[in-house]
Image (cartoon, rainbow, N blue to C red):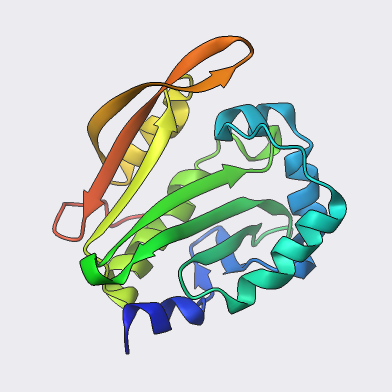
Length: 188
């Protein structure tokens, strides 16, 4: 089975506290609420203001995508929506993809949900999909996310200066990556 075929069928992933399920129309309320959270928008560098119709259309189209895998992060205890995690920018020739995560506001921050979700996605990416490399960028004003990625085994690969303009100030992006051969924590 090709890497692209494996992306076309987004698997449900579970951890002790989380269920990562294919992101879609059923997650509209949580996704919409997350897009209204100023801090979540800042941490992801999201300037665009979306309409409800745009988000509904986006969610409806994800199931047909073969170059990305989008998951809703669900708290298994209370079934609450905690955010989303995505493998995107699939490059099947080089067995690589990008990763991004957006937690859905303060109730999801500082509890290890991001680390748990990213770890599950990396396990899936390397073991089930057969990727060799996963990369990401994190804005310099988000050291909490950088620590999360480092806990998952990502390494800093570089820094791109002044890539985001936020509240009148330029912000650097830190490029990070992990290879399938890099050590990763096994306990999540």
